[in-house]
Length: 336
Image (cartoon, rainbow, N blue to C red):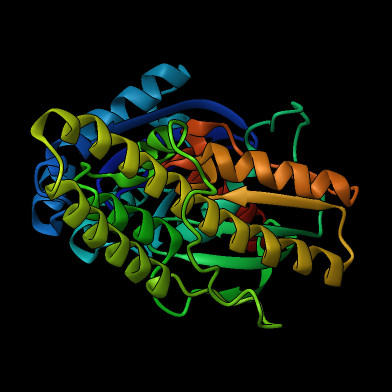
């Protein structure tokens, strides 16, 4: 089956064609990140208007790259939730109309479940294909942080989730505190490579609890206090030293903050894997692209004989291939 996927949950207008739930024939993403960088975040009304403008050309490009015409499509999978409602409605309306015109099923897909499924589309660092079930998935993105026990492509249990800020949201807010542009995650990841992750002892929230929930609001507040303290120190320096010193302490804060987030995520994920007696962990969502998280997760898992899988970088971000891939399994279940 050739499934067309449509993704418009935030600021990426995306379409893709996936064959039999695993072979990505095309994946087109038109990002609005540059547009919203100056605003420091996504504005739903503007995003939805851009989706209206871009969706048809993106779908046409996805079909052309896949070497297919609309009549070759066996189903249209679309992101139904969660996301920005005005943006979602553009994709939902377009997908339902297209499916009706083609006489094929329209399949609603949960955006988070699609991120988890991205591991079935692309290979991890060791280039292994697919992913075994059951496994533990750490889902970390701008709006969500969860640990999931994944039993099949369409069945999972939530073991824990964030009680306030998600990890990706914390990255964006800390980047804003440091005067860095949106989105903050990739920039903090890059800046942290010039910093000392042991320079500041930021708290590791909820590592002393037995559950798998998270909380990053306190960590964000700790960064705020540290920034205020450093600014006062910086203001006392000569102008000649400020620029270089500012970068140095910002890099140290970025590295120390990133280390704290990674430590909490890894600790809870490892505990979940041990409790559920699984030998595979997967990473999913935008924060799964963080280089320090990947590095430390692999090291911790190897010590326990656990395999770590994660999507290619482009599949960590919002895309429609993960939507189409999961849509294939949804259609199979409907037919059965």
